[in-house]
Length: 482
Image 1 (cartoon, rainbow, N blue to C red):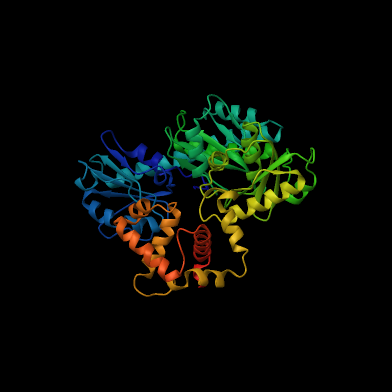
Image 2: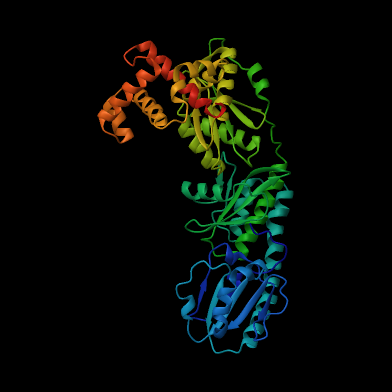
C-alpha cells in the first residue's frame, strides 16, 4: 500500500530520469513505488541525519558499504540509492530485489552535478503531477458529483490515459475496453484483500495498479488499472486512486441494502411446505457481511440457483432452494477468488425439506464451518459422526471398558492401539494394514492376536468390531481429556 501524501515522484520515475543509457535499475515493483523527496550525496563523513524519502547518490567506492546497510537504510525511510560509476560494480551484477531500489548510472559526472539534476527533476515532476491531478479531479471527481455513473467514469479514466480501467464489485465486473483475464483479476483481488486506502501494485502481466472503492466504512469494490497504458507509474497510481474516489461518490447515490438476519430469512421463506432447502455458512477475515453476500448472490446467480442471504454473528448464510445438491467445493473456490480471501471457510448443511428443514440445515452448516481448522469447504455429512459422538455424555466409561488396557504408557501399547485403528479403518484387511504400517503381515496378525487377548474381545464378532470402532472414535475425539 502506498498512500499519496504529496506529489512526490516514485523512485522508478526519478531513477529512470537520472540513469543514462547502459545503466540499470535493480528493484521490485513495490520498492520502486517509494516516494523520493530530496537527493543526498554520500560523502566520506557520512550521510548526516536522515528524515525519510532520500535519494542517496554515491560513488562506486561506497557500493559495498551501502549494500551492507540496505536494511538499516530502509528502516530510516531512504527511498532509493543511485551509484554513479564508469562500470557496473561487480557486487550488483547478480543482485535481485534489494531492500531499497538501486540505480546504476554509467557517467563521469561529478556527484554534485547529479544531485543538481535530481533536484531540478523533482521540482519539475512535482509540478507535472500536481497539474495531472487537477485534470483528474475535473474529469472524474467533478463528473461523479455531477451524476456520472460508473461506466462514464471508467470511460473518462480512459480519456486520461488509463486504458482498460476496470471496476470489480466481486459480483459484476465493468470495464472500459477489453476485460482483464480472470487470472489477473483474481490476482488483484488476492493482493488487495484487506486494503481500505491507497493503492497496491500487482505483479500480473502486465502489472496492474489496484485501489479499493470505499463508500463510508464499507468496501464496495476494486478499481484495477493495467500498466499497459501510456502513463508512467506515478500517473497510473493517481488515476487509480482518483477513479476509486470518483466511483465511491457515484456509489454513494445508490443505497447499499443491508443484509437481513438469518432468522428473518428463515421466517420469510417462500414456497410450498415441501420445498427443499440447503444452507451454506460462509466466513472470511477482513471481509464484511455485505461483500460476502454480494459475492454469494452473484456466484449462485451465475449457475442459475435461487438463493436468499442472511447473516448471523460473523457468518453469512446462503439459503438455496432446489432439488439437487450443488457442487459446494467448487462454489467455495470461486467465492474465494471473487473476494480475494484465501482464508474463506464454507460449511454446508444437508438438503432438507420445508422451513423446519431449512432451519436444521442452517445449524448443520454452522457446525460444519465451526469444525474447520483451515480454509476450504466442509460438508455436514463429513463431520456428522463426530458431531453426534460429541453429544455422548457417558463416553469415558465406555471407552475405558473397551480400550482400557491399551491406554497406559507401557511399551508396545501405542503400537497395538495404532494397529487396531488402522486395521479397522482398512476394512479389517491385514494386507492393507501391513502396507500402511510398513510392517510384515505376520506382525499385524501377531498384534491382532495380542489385542484380542488383552481386550477380551473377538475381531470376528460384528458387535465387538462395532463397539471397538465406536470406542476408538470417541477416544480420538476426547483424547486430551483422558
